[in-house]
Length: 135
Image 1 (cartoon, rainbow, N blue to C red):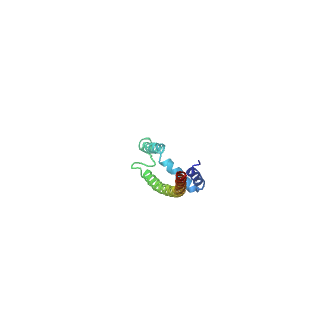
Image 2 (cartoon, rainbow, N blue to C red):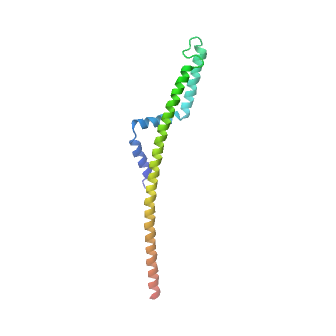
Image 3 (cartoon, one colour):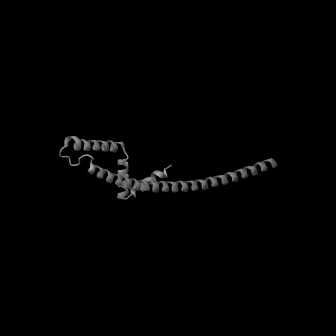
């Protein structure tokens, strides 16, 4: 039996816009441990270079005003990207729920049909029993 969700998901992924794919890629990248490690490493490197290596000629001396600006911009972008990705996930969940509902409706119709067939068979068996008992 073919899993319709796999086919639906593949069709959905093929229909994504470049912006949707970019949002997913960024979300997956920023929500990973390698990103956290690289980010912490970058922050430590920035502080080391500006505090110790270039103490007299640092381009962003303590309290790191330029770094704070970059971090604020990054936080703003991350918020927007996460909202875009969340909106996409909501659309996917809604489509999957609709697909599940349609599957349930079809299954209910098939179960009803089988129950009617079963009732008809039971009726025929009862008639056969009655005929056998009469003869």
